[in-house]
Image (cartoon, rainbow, N blue to C red):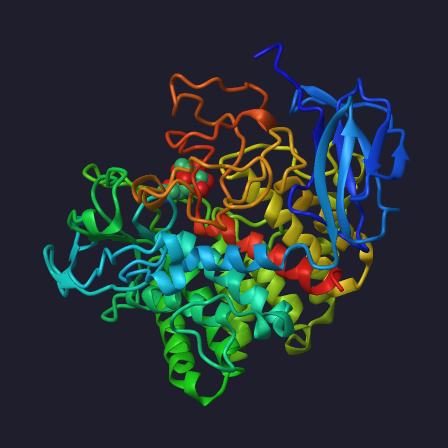
Length: 546
Ligand code: 9MR
């Protein structure tokens, strides 16, 4: 659409870090920004940089760098005689970081959310998933159609109530990654969940709620893993307890089985560092990983085809060399067996920013975190070089981009793309200690928290311009005005422009977003979008905040 109103100031609405880079954007007509402190004194006057046009937002913006403002407090930016309040704090993101993790608790299936832990978002349990049918596509001799399984626990994938292995794989891994990379931070982060245990990070406890469900998705008879646990059609916008359609496990696939193998192998290593209590789970996970790999070797190219009577999310990855690479890498690290390393080398390809459809980077994270277990240093050097090349390209993009971010393609879940780009940068920082990566990751966070072309803070419950009407069944049906907090919405994209037929919707990719419940393509939430946000927040809070 032409003639869209441009928002005069775009900034991080949750807050800036005392010692961090502080960047806002203003529209081209703004020639001076005055920052006032809480005593109404002028704290800073800034002439914005020259205007830069972004073809993805269809507008030009001028950068305002106020990093020199190094004192915590409440401020206002005065632009064209309007005032925009913001804050500077030593630790502006701790509450947000807790909320982003707690959002997954709110999405637990098979469990009531009590008011002690859930406050006004308390709700009854739904989806016990103790009676789950084998769908035709998953039936075999040992488990014919109609066989009943139990597959309880786990997080709902998103705004819908289904549970999908492919998407759970990357999500659960990302959570383990956060735990490993920022372990001191997460050891002390308590978020108020009922099963919290002394001495065990809540991040681990929360992650294991989903992990224990994932375990049940493997057929113990042959090691194959079902692609998803789902109703045939999406449920209406109703509460979990009212959503009682029959549930099915659907089709074993190679992609689900390899993601499962990778995750189980990885978890078997992580769990070993949390004491004897977790030893049986670690042993079971490794055994499951090996069985899954063996199934995949016998069934190397079973891709997901959505059965005619099933309409829910497909996660139908058509290219699975990356899944082979990830699984082989994790199995090598967990067992030390050379056959897996050989496979990892055979399937290796330069990594890109990860997502459910591309898990190359996950294998790279794990291998580079365990370089001492690989004797072929020429290969690990190549991995390092390729990974740093990726991170450097992202940083270079963000340094020249008008909005200060690396994203340059807006797909479904663009906000998670931004969060995953931030995660790549934080991992590069872990490898090199070079502060440019931290700085660029912080810029990604600023974008998600308001310094983007829509002017929304994209995490529910936070910011001045809040997203309110998310496509999330409990938030839609619970009668509480505020959405369940801590969720990152999918964000702008032009993939499906018709989900809210009557909505005013920009055709510019970076602006094509509506805060409407009907907009499942821009305003849904999903576990694989929150996970990199959790990583990003944990990393920034742990490393950049005093
Ligand atoms: O995140 C998924 C996105 O990459 C796909 O393009 C889209 C369409 O297949 O599906 C998204 O995932 C949805 C899933 O299929 C069902 N649950 C909600 C997910 C988020 O929208």
